Image 1 (cartoon, rainbow, N blue to C red):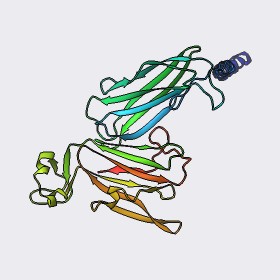
Image 2 (image 1 turned 60 degrees about the vertical axis):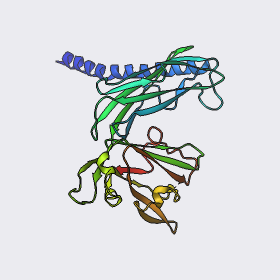
Image 3 (image 1 turned 90 degrees about the vertical axis):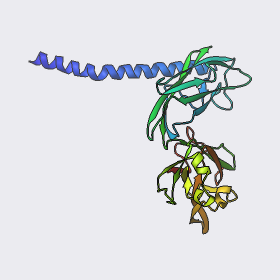
Image 4 (image 1 turned 135 degrees about the horizontal axis):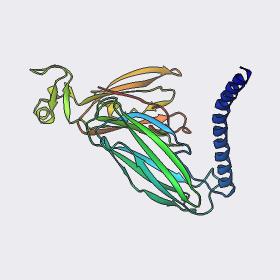
Length: 303
């Protein structure tokens, strides 16, 4: 009986120690590998890919238009430490070919020592109609082939927020403002206020819409977009055409004793794009969305 208990205890200890030993060994190996590379002044990094991988979840895709991602690869650890020599690399992408086509601008490249950076882009093209909240998963891997082998990767879970309507925020550190861009790929209108024989929610084709009077056109919209934000973070450009338009509805709030706009609702036409500028209080921030700032500093909704 005593011998049996000892055997059981030994097996339990092995079950605990062996996985830990494997994990610890892997950790030690990776750190030794990184140390050797840094000692030899080899750095292979990216603005969106990481060693060991990283997962991004974005929900600003319209599902009808292309989704583009720009990547930068570089040969430095910081402003002082950079690689000695050129770095050759390859790029690959994985995705469900039944849902989307994934096109890379290049499947290989060289980060030249003098240039310090190189770039490539990925375009995700829908092959079918996507509905709200449907997702596609795309994997991107960049591998240096010389002078050392190192792999950087990322997984993108791209979700349709509102079918046919996509948006993004473009910004950079030290920029005094960010740009909120939205694209409407819907090619029809929706009756928002009943008129004549038309009821609320009815879909009207673009050719039928053109035949309407200006009064009746004003009762239709391809989509109605609402943007909201905290004036403690950003302030909308009040000279923007959507702010001054009679078809827009705004709300205000008080910040530091001053009244600021904190939301705006406006209609958009079919197959159109809209850009709105927001000024930042803190120019050291980079509010680029998606893939840089975790959540949009300007909240979007559409109906």
